[in-house]
Amino acid sequence: MNRHQPIQPKLAFTNENGELVILHSSGFFSCCTIRLRKIINYYNEYKKLPVVDSSNQWSSYKDEPGDISSKLFTTLDVDVPNSQTVEYSSADWEDQFSNYTNINYDDVGVFTRKYFTHSDEVNELAQALINKYNIDLDNTIAICYRGTDKRMETNIPTHDDMIEKIQSVHNQYPNHKLLIQTDEVGFTEYVKTKIPDFIQFTEVTKVASNKRATQFHIPIGGRLLHAQTFLAIMQILSRCDKVILNSGNVGMWVSLFRNNTDGVYQYLNIHGSNTLLKNHWIS
Image (tube, rainbow, N blue to C red):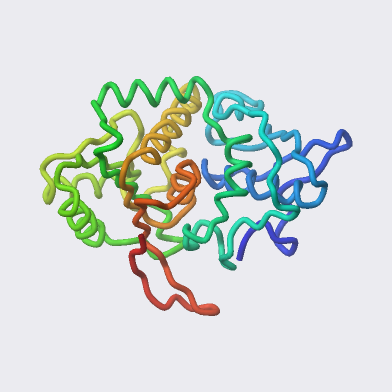
């Protein structure tokens, strides 16, 4: 069920000044998803783009109270979408677990460019990481494995599922380097036993698979920088030539930053009315 629908809990409201106030505060990209969805809802209702107040969001990523959205993103001037009513996707089940090829990137891209273009600070971090790890974006296969507590929400690929897919894609592009980003320390350790040479970022936290998401392990004083670095890494993944990812808000936002699914391999859960039928890779 998509959490932007009216029957779901109220996650945003329009205040007396006409500003869109987003209340949802959870995982980093869960915040982004609800923010994006509510902005699109606002546009569909009022046929204009809102001023957004995100001071209630990203609570686990703050070192002090306030709206940190400007530290993460820059709001740009853009033309409004061509469509009178913007449909986010042709999928009818929860966005993060849907087939990302069904996202309406032409229209949705207007909103991601306006409200989710990365801040100068994030861009500088991304470039510093590209330089540090000597990443050739045009010749890199990025792997994004979201583990830990995501398995409580959906079926995620096993480590062997991921290794098999990585090796299959790498065999097609043998001159590409591998860049692996995960929140799960066990996955990294397992990959090392199967794949001897890959790039991994040491700037963000990894935890055991039975732990809560990484943001709960960052002390106050380092939360904002960790969030900015995490966002910079997702930008880098989105710019790589090929991307292998599992379904979830993190993987979906890699595709949204990319603004397409060209070269993206997604581990997708296929659902019936209420039952998981099977899992498979799509590209």
